[in-house]
Length: 318
Ligand SMILES: Nc1ncnc2c1ncn2[C@@H]1O[C@H](COP(=O)(O)OP(=O)(O)OP(=O)(O)O)[C@@H](O)[C@H]1O
Image 1: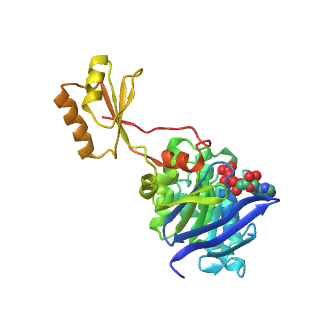
Image 2: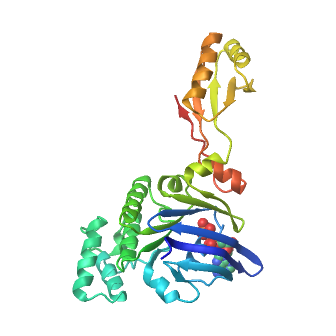
Image 3: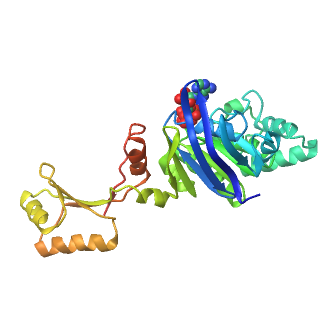
């Protein structure tokens, strides 16, 4: 192995005359979580399908688990696990039977199959429900069973295509915990998501897919640094105090109707202190002070034109 679990150079895929992937490079180090982020239809699932050998690329040098995808897809398949947006869980049979079916597919002996299934059902908090038909499971339980089934074959690289879409916040957090534990165990996780918060929370590196290309790639912090947008916002109810503050501070953007002032900055303690000192010297007090640091939403909107998901400005009230 090269130290990279996944390496793609110049990955291209078109459907008809639509170039869905227009020359994409990816490098995912072993034992890390990599998140591919993009709006609906950006091509995330297409990337997963190609890297997991379900769809062939039109062009590109692709290696997964050290194996050349074009030359040795069988070896790639033996290394990976895939959990897609559409579950592999069969609702008519029990959770345990679903697991044993996977064990059969992986040619485990009966005994080994039972052992691995029991262990995974326990680990994913499904032991109690194991003998119930999977159709009776909640969305979160089905998703956990789906991942447990993926793990039966002991994959070193796991593709999770939007693993938390449609889950409630508690189930989402459980899933995040599961994903973190997988990586602690040395597995590499390739995760697609539409949730910026999810990528921010989990991923070592994030790539933003837009218009068939990678619009930006880096750690969450690196990506946040590429967009401006940090500021302190002061709100007043007294117009006289507002005007006084506006003339005491440098570089402010005024909103005379809302009586708010916006001071650009990185949200650091030093900058905040300078603002407070200026207000103190002028003898005014703001009614509300909020600090806005750029988050992945800002990055996403800056890179993808902002049409994909509603804005969720994160403002910490101090
Ligand atoms: N088999 C196919 N035939 C034709 N077009 C396809 C096919 N599969 C995907 N596409 C098109 O490729 C584009 C990317 O689809 P893809 O499912 O990869 O996006 P995505 O980023 O996973 O989106 P979502 O978040 O909605 O799942 C879409 O415009 C889609 O319509």
